[in-house]
Image 1 (tube, rainbow, N blue to C red):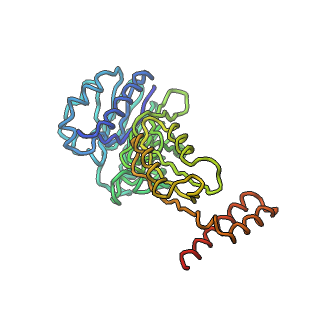
Image 2 (image 1 turned 90 degrees about the horizontal axis):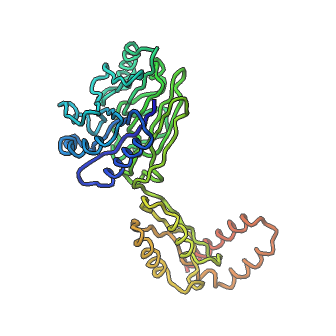
Length: 356
C-alpha cells in the first residue's frame, strides 16, 4: 500500500502558507496515487480552528481519491471529541482500541493523552494484544521519542511540557511495520525498532517557527521499497552566513547576490554577515555596506539581517601590521594556518587600538 505521511501542519484561519502546504500535500498524494494520506497529529493549531475550518478542509481533501487518516495531537486533541464531520474519505482515530482498516492494512492510532512514560508503555503493551500479527499493522503516534537528540525547541512553541514521552523499546512488543509519528518539527528522521519496523518523523511540512530551516519534507512509503523523503516547495526558513574576508578581491556583495539567486522560492532567508571588512577596498563604510545588504535582502523578502562584521581598515593600513604580513607571506606555513595566524594578529591589533 502506498502512503503519504505528514504531521504538524498547525492550520489556522490567518496563515495561508500553511494552507498552501496542505494543498501541496494533497496534490502530491494525488500525483503519487497513494491509498492513504496520514496526518500524525496537530493538523490544527488550536481546537477552535477545527470547528471554524471544517468546510475548507472538506473542500481540499474532497479533491483526492485517497483516504485521509488523522490522529489528534496535543494542539487539537479536543477538536475531534465531538465527532465533527471532515469528509466522507476522512477517518479520525479517536480510540486507540479501534483501528481503521484499508484493504489488508490496519491503521492504529494513539490520540494525544496527558499520560506518563510508564502509562504509555503499558498502553502500547495492551495495543500489542489487540493487533493481528498476520496482517500489516501501522501505528500513528504524536509525541516525544526520548532516545533522540531532539529538544523542546524542535517541537515549535511548546515550552518544556512533556508530550506522550516514549522510548523505542516501548514499541518492540507491537507487530507493526511502521510507527508514523508527529510532534518534532525540525527535520525528517527515522529509527529502526529492534525486532520491529521503522519509527519515522517527517518533520513539519511548512515552517511554523524560525528553527524549521531548510526544505520541508513529507514521508512517502511504497510497498517493497524503503520509505523516502519527498521535498516540498512550501514555505521554510533558510539560514545563510556570509563571512567577509578583508584580503579577498571578490566583491562581497557579488557573493551575496549569487547566494540569493540560488535561494528556493519558498524560502525566507535568515542572513548573518560576519567576518572582517576592508572599507578602503570597496569605497564604502560599515554603515553603507549594511545599507546595501539590507536593500538586497529586502528585495527577496528576507528578515532583518544580523550584522557581525567589522571594518579593519585601520589595522590593515598600520605599518607594523604590513611588515608582519609581509613576513608571514614568506613563511612555509600552510595557507589555512597562515589565515588563522593573520586573524589572531588582526584581533590583537584591534585590541591595542581600543586601549589606546
